[in-house]
Image 1 (cartoon, rainbow, N blue to C red):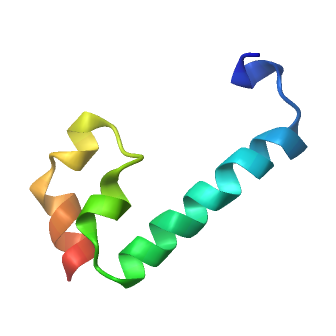
Image 2 (image 1 turned 180 degrees about the vertical axis):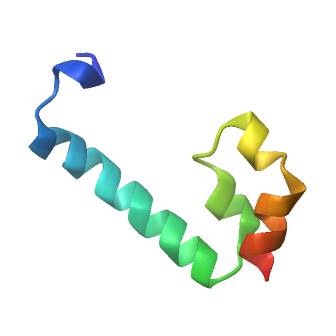
Image 3 (image 1 turned 120 degrees about the vertical axis):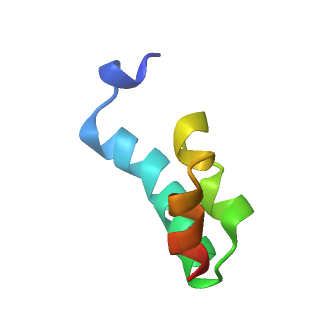
Length: 54
């Protein structure tokens, strides 16, 4: 099933754990975990990494 065919409730159930991981990784200044859901361009941007590790 395409994500566009899912209900808001189904999408939120998928996204919430991802958001929790990203927030935890940010708080831990863990770039590898933080960037795993980013696009390649975002993950390779040194400014993004600098902000997370600051």
